[in-house]
Length: 242
Image (cartoon, rainbow, N blue to C red; front, top):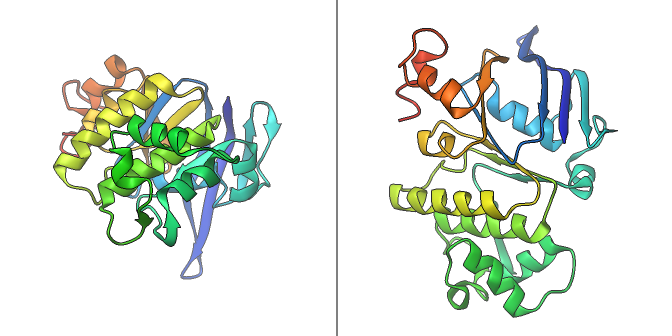
């Protein structure tokens, strides 16, 4: 279970203080949580604070009751948090099998590594020995990254706008992978996204705007507001999530 207690994050900009996150308190123990909201609202900053890339200027972060606020991204990874960037990193010289093996933290055979690739809809024999370099598309890289996260089996997996930079066909296949991941994962998944198809498979939706939680709840409670079917909260997002 992840707990955020009164989290704020600010930066100095042109001699002035700018608050990007403002007093955010959350408890996340659902299997699949989507965080959405307008551009510039603080979503990616929140993801990086959870992952340990950024340190909050105020508040505490607890994972299963343990205070991890002062831990960096490597230390949080050791505690069981995975983070997937908008643009996955390429590793020239390393094969897909190398990465999956490193992610698992143990020596695994080709059949097991191939199993993870099959889970994300990739033909294992076509990818297992390929280098993770510029020859792979954005959609392929994101599936391989998900296979790595599945191999790690972490308590918490955070994806920052996984739809960024991939074509419509790849995105449709990525949705299928997330639906499958939802069924298979033992921990919690947090996805930062504007896409309605991702929000549709979330157990809980959190709307972040101007650095604050604007609303949160189930699909039935939040999606009508996002899509403008109910006057009020966040109707400006209706075009973003379609």
